[in-house]
Image (cartoon, rainbow, N blue to C red):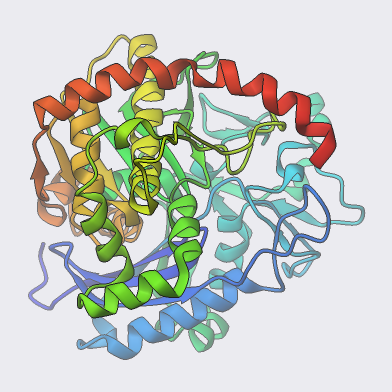
Length: 477
């Protein structure tokens, strides 16, 4: 670092449930932050899941203004912005870059299908749309185009095969120009500055998709580290340097550095959402007990669930609250009641199901990759729970680290920005200065032995429940 003036970086983390904007210093410390909850999805008919109106841009403005209002430094010392958004979304734009229709959520069935909107001028991702709102350019990060998009995963650029473009329903002129993570997308326009409070003219830096940027903010670098992201979608990830095109038990995602990849296990849709659903189901009674104990509802539930033995006295949960498209008949399952269990058994059973499911899927991923894991990192909202951390340590039988940043995706975006603008020479140097290890939870061997036995049950449980739900699917759907 050559300047004696302080330098700051803004990390924008537009997630599935909220937009978060954090100002970081060169040591990766959060100086100020703002958050705005996204509105409920618009679901006018089955399979259609949209972000209403212009909610992504609206909430980024709200969160940015809150972060800048709380910023104690000189805005002139803010060097740049790293933009990270939800992956697998699709935005259809008019010729002037405004929305032709609401942004499709990653849960919308249309994002896995060819583009089919008449008279659309552009088809892009959430990051492409928000880049245009920030900078006025029609550019986007190549690393947010996993999935159906006609991108060559080896070159990280658009396919040159006209038939592949036609199969997606677009021409090249309808697609944004792609840049690599760490490149400049453009500068904040006066209009964007008025909306966000971010100074006009500062550079906006390309990052990747939200899971990849989150992984960078957690310091994921080794193929022997398993990163578990505890969000609306829960999955296990590790890292590598080559694209694996036809994997059986994982898929290859783009990382936040050119030429690097993330390997991601199959996961749990509505993962931490299910935890929140059950918390809300307990309602005011749980809130009253929590207030009496001087705790938040989450802390109260965790404290009570800690008293439940590992394995929940035989109560098991299967987390299909949102069925996969390959098995739409599936439903969530609670089984094993025998009179010993109560509400806190159910709560702990949901947490255990998350850990056991990801242990199974990540173990199969490791086998196919020919690697082994010697540590686990947990990130996301669920990692704030000591109980969740300990359950994962016990299930995996490995030291389990808590990610330290309140917004790891925001920190990852700031790291990309710090490297792009020359504050650090490369990503490894930036990680050394901007990330730090969190609390480590060591496995309880007795609990680990219990979970090893339960693991065999969880691996086969859907073989028995699928037939039931296939039989009843036509009755209730």
